Length: 295
Image (cartoon, rainbow, N blue to C red; front, top):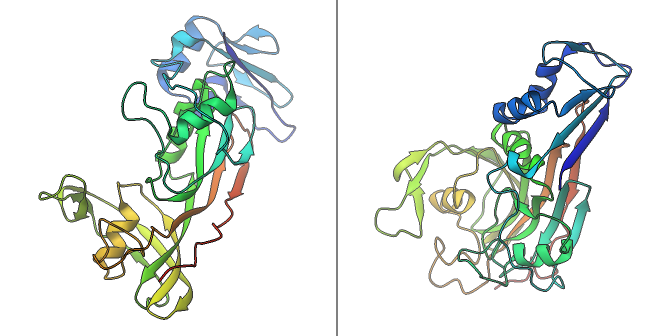
């Protein structure tokens, strides 16, 4: 098995050294090294030195092998694909609408019933994936981005690290929040509860959350949230620390709240792998029917 990518450079392309183009495609150095020493990078059908210029109209072809990757084939047992709602699919990427109550991925060998198991069944036995790029908490619904081939995993992970993947959430929170704003408190571990995180906790790391108020109900506010960083439980911790915990949050909300979590990954915007132009794709996940039904 191998994965080959072919890209013809557009008429507007500015001549660039081949190595620089591979770097611009966010390929890590070890993959560039493998492509070079095994001559699996071709320009117009022939091997080209990494320092040579490539021009508009040239066709660049890259071929990846399973040996290029530590885990080319994820060990995920396929489970029923009945719950998989596909929002977007290309040759390399997949965005599904995760359901409430489903774990994103298995934690133990042989574990089944998670979103990743269901997607593996959807893709079928001839696809090496799925490969997970990020996760949603078990009770969180909405858009979840995965890749179908190992070659794209390091590229998309670098895009995430470079903040080129934008995640926008909708949430109902307790209380009356107004206006727009930013939460910037660092988040670390809760020393008293290993399940939880807290503002300025142990080994705290920078965390930035942008919010925009959309609507109000009695003692509740609908807000739009955009993650600039991706700390564990970031949205839940920032909102709880601000005095507006998520409705239905069993860890950070009031004990009297018996609702299910009202947090939905509403929209993802991401670059396409191996694109020459700055092509962005936006995918929107429909809001669950019961999202605004709570006591």
